[in-house]
Length: 141
Image (cartoon, rainbow, N blue to C red; front, side, top):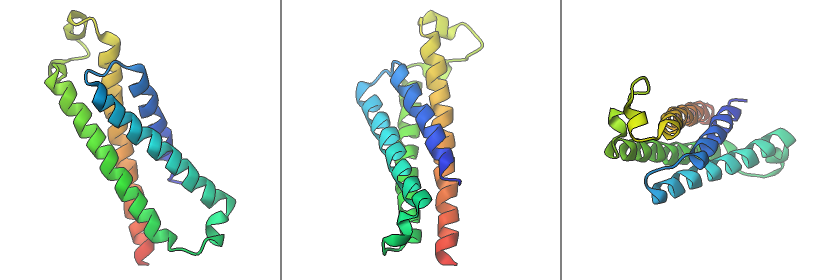
């Protein structure tokens, strides 16, 4: 069940963004919207597949699978790029986790959390991309 990996890493993104002090509050709202919405929609989709209710609903699930994962991929990629750009614009581009830059701004924890957020957001983007490609192969077979 490959659909579980984006949920797992998406939950980590949700936790990391909620616990960090993002420099732009509007950006934090967008990232939280993307991560929470994708988490709950993926959970609902996984529940439909596991319980077998998807077999009772007459629709093209392969197309919906590709479409959903494409939209989730776009949203997570946008959130990842916006967060990386905002971090870079606020001096985060010069943040080296192994030197004193974070101590100067007294934001050691936030530097680590933003760094981890960007890594996990990129991993979630890759997971949704792989899910979309596998769904596309299944749809075309």
